[in-house]
Image (cartoon, rainbow, N blue to C red; front, side, top):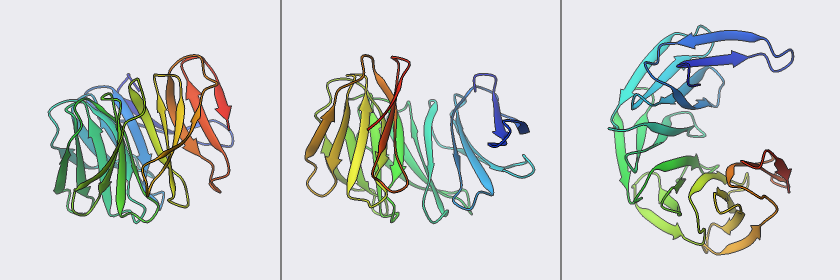
Length: 219
């Protein structure tokens, strides 16, 4: 949050379990590790921090960006972290060592969202440059650029089967893409303001989108 804290809540009774303090600026993004033992947070202070989710202890501070860290995502196997920044780049980190493995360059504006493919081989990113990019996560090679949005792209999410990507944009639409061909399969147009977030259901049969029009739509 803007108050520089990360809070872990009990989802059943909505109680504050742990309030984590230690960021020197606002927190833009948080992501659980796949095993649920750790949290990663990205901040306006240009850093990525790994926390022990049970104690709230800071374990590592990863520094490599020169502007705000906007988005963070843990790989499915828990070994890597990817984060996107206002400096237009994505960094892939080795969680155990805290070392920077790769810097992905190719976006021309803020990287607003990053998402690993379910098999951990690929990474998708969205940007204020109005594009979605698919990367080979191991080589860092840019594989595809998806360019049909007419406004900032704020969110990207991989379907559970790995075949599709959903993206949300300030052009008020949600687009569904075929990962293999890069074709836009559907454009969903019910929102009346920009779309800030998209998320697939665990079975991949439904998609949720949240918008500045104060609504969430389930498709």
